[in-house]
Length: 113
Length: 110
Image (tube, rainbow over all chains, first blue to last red; front, side, top):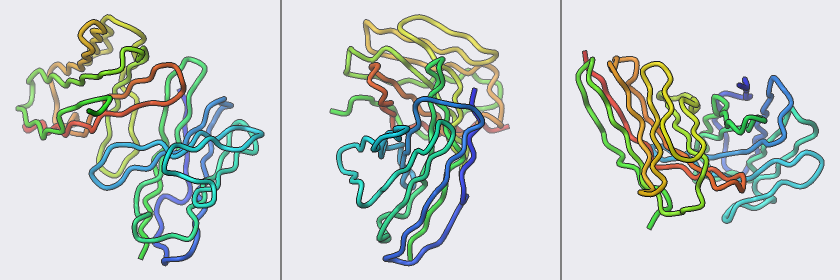
C-alpha cells in the first residue's frame, strides 16, 4: 500500500489568486496523478505527474491553469492558478504502486470566493 | 453513452443485509477493476482490486468481474452502519487512466 499526505487539507481563496497543493508519499512510486472531484460528483483526472518531465494533461485541463511539478519519486505539487469560483472543488493526489494498485490522498478542499 | 455506468442510488438497507453494488462498462479493453469506498469529506479508499475475470474475496467483501457481460459487482455481507459511504467502481485498460463510475451512496441503518 501507500500512505499519501496532502497540504493544505482545505483553503478558502479569493478570485484571481493561486494556490499550490503539496502531495507527499511514504514510498517511491512511478505513477502520480492529480484528480478533481466536484461536489456530489465522481473523480476526473486532471493530469499525470511525470518525474523529470512535463506533466501529461487530460482534455480540458491546461498547464497554464494547473501547473504541476514532480521533482522526485515521492513528491508532487499542483497549482491552481488565477482561480475562479468554478475551481471550487476537492483536489486529490493519487499514486500507483508496482502492484498496480492505485491509492488516493485525503484531498484538499478548495473554496474560491 | 458513458464508458462506465453506475447507479448513484441512494441505496438504503438494514444492518446485516447483503448489499450488491454493480457497474457496467462498454470498453472491452478494460482489464483492471477496482472498488473504492469514500466516506464524506475523505479521499477514496481502495477496497478491492481485480485483474481480468473472476471472483476475489476479502473478509465481508467479494468482488466479481464478468468480462463477457461487461459487468462488475461488489458484494458486502453482514453490512454494518460503518459501511455507509459512497462506493465507486473504477477500471482501466492498461494505459494508466482510471475511469470511474458515478458512485453509489449506501446507507446501512441499525
